[in-house]
Image 1 (tube, rainbow, N blue to C red):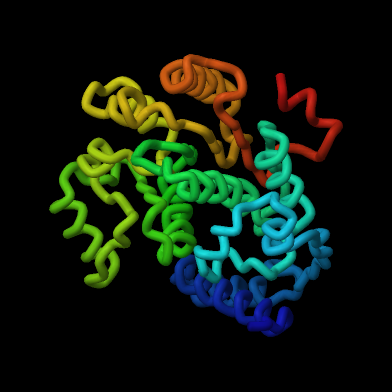
Image 2 (image 1 turned 180 degrees about the horizontal axis):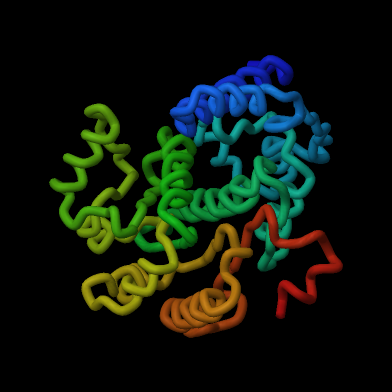
Length: 307
């Protein structure tokens, strides 16, 4: 739906002036009149509208073309979800990220603007890996990918996306393990129905802590604070030790620019502990992916980033 920028500006300005005149009103009528006149003066309170033309990101191959080329698994066609349309051209940076992860086994940072498809740049290679495991018959319970977020709101947003991506493919499991996650399945079901107007969760969404301990999900979503607890608590060791713990493959950190200063040091040590726990810190066993919309200006900032 298109927006008329002039009318939108006028409507916002009118609402804001109304809010100020009622909230910050004066009992003295003369002062109130002067206040209203000041609010109505052009360019005093609101300027604009200011329009900015943003060029589209460069287009590249479609997922269907990458499947035909042999880069991606043909089983991606079985997902049949609107969120990952096979015939829509990927952005150039998405295709580069997919190729580096799938073909060249590289660690990557996806630093590009908001709304440019950073999620697809890492979720497609992860789903591709899981679908190839399914094809080989080796897709058993166990974490393959950890999606780490700095706050629960971002984790919840990713959870909603995974529901859309995997609603037609129940063999790939996923779960969010944060402070909001209930202990028992019964508690979790009640909360889920309450939040989603009586709907039932997908068969492949693990919604309780006991579910994720019994059969760890293929894609685990959490935040860095909860990851600290998970690594320490013996009852959560099934995620990192034992028969289901040998399949770890991806660590994704969203909004990596937020991990600076003391928080960055603590998170770096946390990730090192995780890598030592699940792959004994063996090089090349885990693919590490970072994403950010505000990480830097380009190649000239690379040295600052790696420091």
